[in-house]
Image 1 (tube, rainbow, N blue to C red):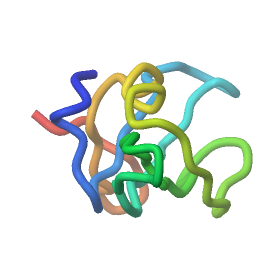
Image 2 (cartoon, helix red, strand yellow):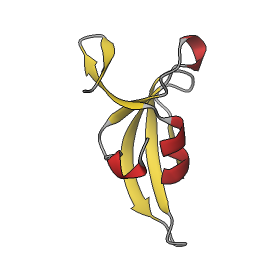
Image 3 (cartoon, helix red, strand yellow):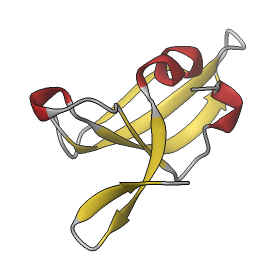
Length: 79
């Protein structure tokens, strides 16, 4: 996914199935002391649910496939 499309507050899916399926919500995007864009995200579905992690925005954009929104009890692809 294009890093410029990733927004704070939005949720994104790995697009995989079974145990490889994840949904991550972007908590924050900021620039660190080395002038690199960092993404802080929370795992909403999948292994390590409810935990928060950080990585380079470029790395995050490589593992997400599309944006999703919670609809009742299921995650639905946006668009």
